[in-house]
Length: 146
Image (cartoon, rainbow, N blue to C red; front, side):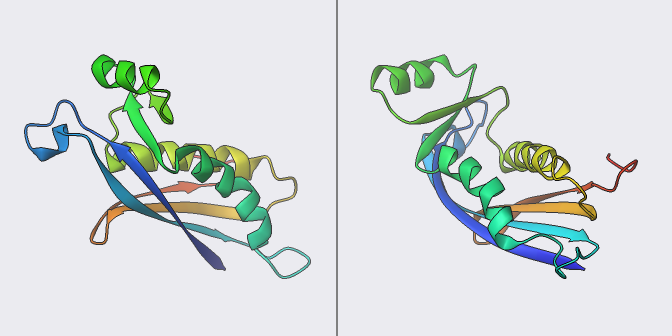
C-alpha cells in the first residue's frame, strides 16, 4: 500500500556558482510530496497522517520563509546574520536535487525510529516550480536500507 501527503513552504536561496539568473537572490514556493509504501498496521494504516505531520511539519517550519544558504557563501551569510534574518545554513549548494536528498535523509532517519513499522520505501518529490522537481527514493525495509 502507498500513502502520500503534500506539504508547502516558501524559501529563498541563490546558487553562487551559477552563470545565469539563479546566481541572484530569489525564492520559490516549494511543494513536497512524501510517499510511503509499506504494510498495514493493526489499524489498517501504513502510517497515520497525524504522525507523519509530527515528523514533517517541524522540518518545514525550520525552512519556511527562511533563506537557505550554502556555508561558503560568506557575503550573503554575513548579510543575513548582520540583519538577523531567518536562515538555514547548509554544507551543500541549494539546488532542488540537494534539498530533496537532504529532506529524504532527514525523513528516513525519523521513520526508521518508529518501532514496529512495516515501511518498505520512502519517496520524496520536491517541486521548486509548478513544472520542475527532484525526486529521491529510499528503501526502508529492515536490511534493505540503501
